[in-house]
Image (cartoon, rainbow, N blue to C red; front, side, top):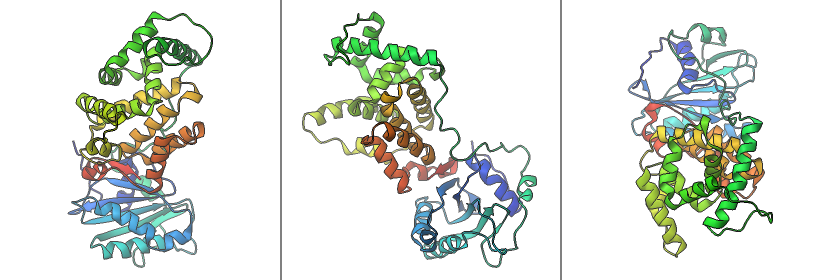
Length: 377
């Protein structure tokens, strides 16, 4: 359901932007695409570090290019958030605002207004503006009943807290599972130490016989109550690219998609080409996934990563990164991907996600349904 809230003036509009995003941006530019005078979501990008980048129109072209990918958009508003103060009454990052205005005009988009919220006030960067206004106006202008924004764009990316006892249980489960997999799959043991085979671990390992059913069952688990063996088996699968990619395709589609991805993986290993439509999912192309499934998968993998020993959690973290990116949360995606590459500098999926974030590349579906929410590019 879409909730419509009318902004009476500029201050009220600015007070609503953090609520639209769900957080208060820092060192950011927020782009609000418009159609027929109504907003269709919001997109956030990091402010360029180098002022010379902001002065040319390259970054502005990236901003406007994102708006152009929203078919219904006919205009936009922008808000720059910075911790810099105004200087002699001139708002910071005015050059960037001018570049966006030029590029929008060249693209046939109407730039309705461009605001700057800085350390000591706020104002418009369009025309002569109306001078620097106090930040207190943005607080008093918030309409009643609108949910409060919490934290900034980095908030919420920390892994869930799990107790030392839970992590020890998960580590023991991983050792038991490793022993069972040497029997079930003929894999080499992780150590030379001989261990008894835990029947429960052997039963868990047998779930690999029907991987799509296992992934779907794991998606229905309550992550807070995740059994140690279940967490260990999910972590084991996500640490292996061929099994991990099946999970991503399935969680972004359905069980049938997982079955197709598993068959495609088998054929690819025998020399066949990987189907273009399945590969497209990984690049953010094709039909929009059910965001509830992606949210469930992200919650699951965040808890799996939290329970897994740091040296073994790169796979789970990279999946957290991809799922966050698929949900339009590029800042979170980059945080997870960076954590993965600190463990494994050559981790392929983590590097891919980081390249997406660096290029401000969002999945196609982030633009198809922009009106349903906000994206963090």
